Image (cartoon, rainbow, N blue to C red; front, side, top):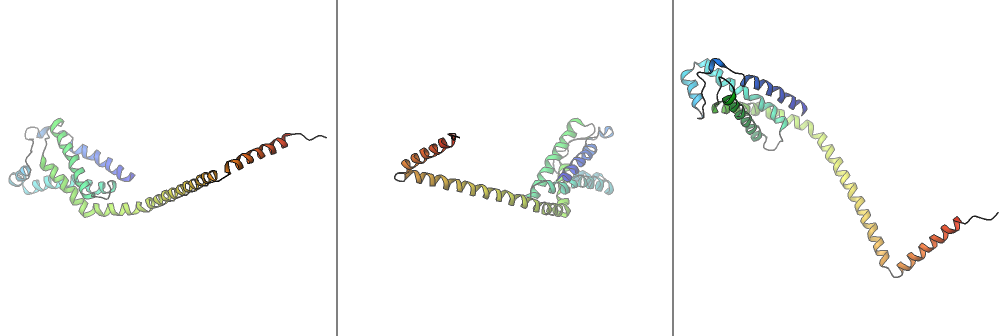
Length: 203
């Protein structure tokens, strides 16, 4: 788990450097895109094949580490959905920061889609296996802790049950005929014995 956090922090630093670095040379051509598929269509029509592959592949690769790191950190239930949602949220925040404060960059919904797709592909190819292996290794320790907690709960329950039985026996003894008189007589006898012990013997 700690290794996963370290990897996530390291990747976040790299992601910030790649996406939040100003690009003054692109300030005149950068424009926001809120229509899904618009930038992809532009890549296909206006870019060369290699340039289009660089743009699309770069965005896919940029999101892939999410699909490798998040499976280690998120719970097993609905893990794929969590990976996709978390990646999309992070990339939306990055794109919003690009459009708001970074020179030469703009918000592009197609970048979010490609980044999220890269995370999903990485999860399906490798990340799912990494998550299963990691949680399988961590499971024996969790089971031992659960067994210890269950044993402690059973011990406390037995202790409470014995205490309830003792209280019930005391209450039952008090309700018997003559129980109160016998208790008084016992207390008096105890006091007499203690007083005799305190009396010093004559030489």
